[in-house]
Length: 429
Ligand code: GLN
Image (cartoon, rainbow, N blue to C red):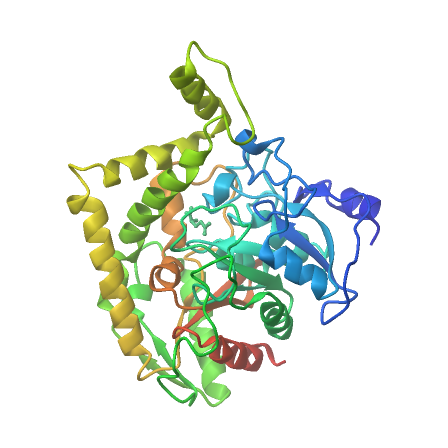
């Protein structure tokens, strides 16, 4: 598809912030002939990277992120950068400084977030594959809302060098694709140890705990929470039946610590974000606003450059890290993180995968989540994977009316192979 054609087809959806005029192909490899869209928080040398923020409106990437370098070597053609919630904070792409992205299945509804542009671009057929980043669900949730496959790899599997950071202990890059087979191909291209990211891991980092024998655990109590729509519950039961008919053994499991995952996430994430975003001071990058003196410059630049949600999280993060509240909030959230990780790893000694819905509801309407807390609840089923570092995939599991739904499989650390096996079985690939 030519750039003009993508632009024309994207008019109503606004998945792209920019469709490149002359997309180039560099190397040759497993992605030859494939067009790929990247989220606006990836550095791609010579191109803008604004992370959906006004503060980086005129920032041009001075080098390639490791992932972009790998895409180039693998023969991909990068066609453009996609819209996102500012600094990847959000679940609807309504927080972008550059306007919303619409869900291709229903233009009145959100595509999910924060990688809503990448999910919508793929769902609308404007690229063959796309990439996003996932800090608390930002690949899996929009994948579910847009009816595509979305994978968050194990923490450290994919280099974050050249990804504009949100929360460094949670962020992970991953693919959006139409099939699980394609997700595996793209994952194999982008994964790997990287001297430029000391948190990256290799195939041997996590020794295999358990041989794959088609066992799936469903944390029933957690799934049957308030706020989970009837359609979503029904869809999960159908998915369970399908897995059973494919020879899987599906059992109920108890995961008591999952109840604390969302609260822990909304402490750890803003804490790290407040620290990461301190670099946007009007001196080093992007926007600069003149005030009375240099402190005033700082307040003006950040006040005008950051949107509401970003400012909210910077304030929240600074608060939970402040000396008087550190133990009460941040310290406790870290304890919860440890407990969640231990409980999940224990569970993976007896089951290969954990199955939940990806989202409590199908795609919602613009403006429907009027309070931030309501919006945060959209992440209820996704944050555990980031908190524990475990890999998780969202797979299309049918529709309610014209709205797609997704199921989510989570695996033990380093066991993406189990996600691919079960995902392909489920999709009949
Ligand atoms: N929706 C979550 C949030 O608002 C997740 C964001 C993400 O994964 N980048 O923080």
